[in-house]
Image (cartoon, rainbow, N blue to C red; front, side, top):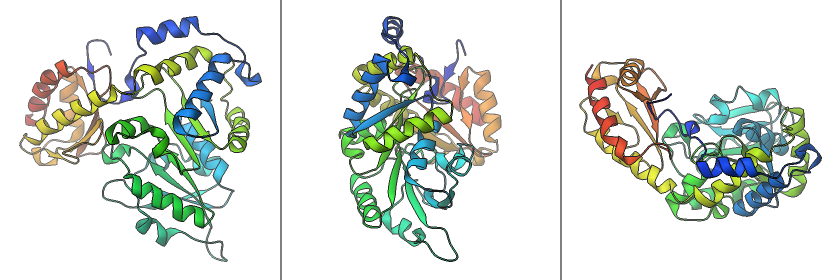
Length: 345
């Protein structure tokens, strides 16, 4: 929305001028035939970045997760997932609809599963229960406030899962935020997972598209699933060109988004009646509860909109703000003024 400060999500980011020029200049072909050279370059570079044999360009993160889960499971199995995870709550039950699997939710305080929490829910095939098909992890974890998996936790989960023949899929929609926050390569984070999805259209600011990466044989099968889901985009290089440029120019600057989120979290913590769920945000997401102000999250959101700031309520009591490349530190003061007035009513 023109003239508004938009903190609803990092999905609202717009491609840079350089990306738009790259899109205009992109060399194109028919990707369903494997003949779009720009898509081919994007997939090769993406696989290299995450340390996997092959990658697949898909229209959305939901499609990437859907295919990744399908590749690691068979119908009638269970998927272990954190209870507030995107896969369970925001993807239209695609794990059930397309993969034919039940999600087994596991509660955590911070969105981070550990092997200790997972192990009680791991089931072999038996006469009364479904077998565990895969474990799904979300890094960063959206609804926990952009929390990041410790490397040793990831390593242990993948090690224990592999011993039991269970695949691990990483919903890494914002895995580059995790990489920058931890100061490690994305390939290190993704090292032991079987499949990983990440978005180009969030913090990396490409206009559309996500990547699914993993072993070559799985990704080749994934191409068929992409076609079944309507993801064959033909001359998709016009989109892939922006993703290639994002790898070069948009990763390191994610640290600015993290700093802006920390500054806003600090301010929110100073407001009477406001409780910041993640007072020291690890990345670019802040979740805050306004119940003690006497106002609902919907009322606060409406007041913010009147003041020119967009933020989404995520429950009756809580809102989420997400910083991104189209939000500048110079705008923080205006957001703080709007927040202070909105929570007072």
